[in-house]
Length: 239
Image (cartoon, rainbow, N blue to C red; front, side):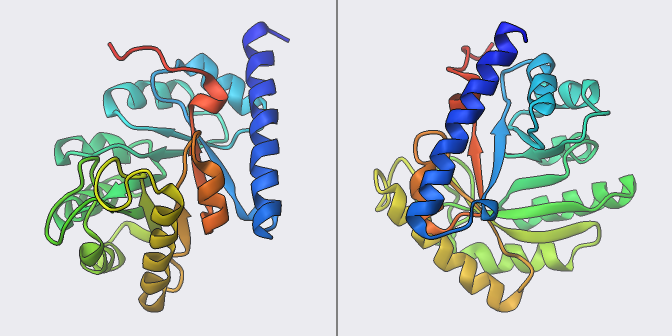
């Protein structure tokens, strides 16, 4: 076993202990929570090692890094998630490799994703990114649509060819009423998810929580957690 593979294996084991403990505390079954490893800034070699260690979901946030990495790892049994703010001029590239886009936050983006998915002959899973730091009609500092804008974006996804509405996502906000209150933020996301499922019952995915706050997310009811640093280590500075 290489040093890097051993390091990743140990980190995954510690992560599994944390998620299992959080599930037990919340009275949830461990299989209710899916781990997505955020591999941004890390090389394809790490993605290969992770796949060999049983990881099946990976995430990226910048198309210029993700596209070549996904191409290099195309034969691996992985589900690729795009989690970054997405500009419409990058949509065609992202649809070429991403199985799911977690950062859908405006109808214009829905239209672009739909056109690209149809052109590529693919079905792309979509999450509506909720900005808990945004007022009505505004976007969040880290992307996302204000809570009252979720139904319109969700309805657009559900009606679009080539797209599948799978649920909601949030990033714990750094400002606003939920700043520093991750558990409350994630509980609010669950409320929004429940409201969405009244109209779209199959949209039951709730993506929330990262390396520092995954326990709060699991206890609040998240179905997916996005973990980077806890598995791969402290990220190198962006080029």
